[in-house]
Amino acid sequence: MNTKIIQINRENFTDAELAEAAEILRNGGLVAIPTETVYGLGANALDESASKKIYEAKGRPSDNPLIAHISCMDELSALVSEIPEAGRKLAEKYWPGPLTMVFPKKEIVPYGTTGGLETVAIRMPSDPVANRLIKLAGVPVAAPSANTSGRPSPTKAEHVVEDMNGKIEMIIDSGEVGIGVESTIVDVSGKVPMLLRPGAITMEMLRETLGEVEIDPAILGPLSADVKPKAPGMKYRHYAPQAEMTLVEGEMEHVVEFINQEAKLALEAGLKVGIICTEESRESYQCGMLKVIGSRENEESVAHNLFAVLREFDDQKVDCIFSESFSKDRLGQAIMNRLCKAAGYHIVKV
Ligand code: AMP
Ligand code: MG
Image (cartoon, rainbow, N blue to C red; front, side):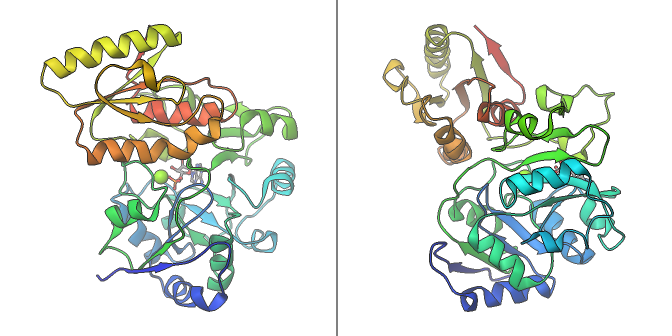
């Protein structure tokens, strides 16, 4: 398939520029779209055969449910059988934005989109291109991250081209995304709201709006074989670079010392070594290929660069990666969740 790539300036575009993309979505095709979190791979969420194409293009297991994207509040009630109080409050405060909520689904939403679940995950993106495209398509848009399943999520159109060129009808290139990690997911279908995936809407923000919020154990560490994950997607390996990655936790001084030591050993063994450091620590490393993930003073910068850094190490074909770790407060919870998964929970405490 020939993939058409179009450039859209998110600050200044017309409906006419999005007309073809909207048409493709309505007709059951696939369009990669920029959003404020990461690039998404869009298809008509109400068309089971269109959702199926997403799974094929990504190589995604079919029990891993998709998030349906809407453009405004009026589009919600067609998809969900109930809007619980917690969902109403969060929608008022954080939609449009990087928050996904899980609701009981209406019959119209096919199991092919929800991975066989009776619930549906819904998000209203704030990115002007994504939001307008959904409106113009006139259908809810299922859109998981536009990467090959298991690879780091795409934060630039080039990443999408790498993974999806030739597999989908169109890629909309609007440059880099803003946030860089996927949306926060909260299940509001049960008695107590439950955080299923941390993101830019932090646990602190959710608790401020809702009071009690539970955390799914899958966020905090690897699931043991006998635990059935709440969201099927949680059981899969994610965001992984090709290299073996080690996340190093502890006081900075010890972390730097450990990484320098291990990097030297690995180099002596003939391996190509990558190091994920910060603006603050970049001068402290003596060998290996350094990549600055951001500044500790600005956790948004770390989230923004995280997946791009993992992809760059893939491009450089490094054999092993050592990464510093971060506080798990606020946005740090999302950052550490992605880094832990990328490292396959290979964490060393020093
Ligand atoms: P993404 O990989 O960004 O497309 O996000 C999809 C993730 O959303 C899945 O892997 C699940 O973790 C979660 N999800 C989607 N739908 C549901 C649902 N109905 N119930 C629980 N989690 C869901
Ligand atoms: Mg994804």
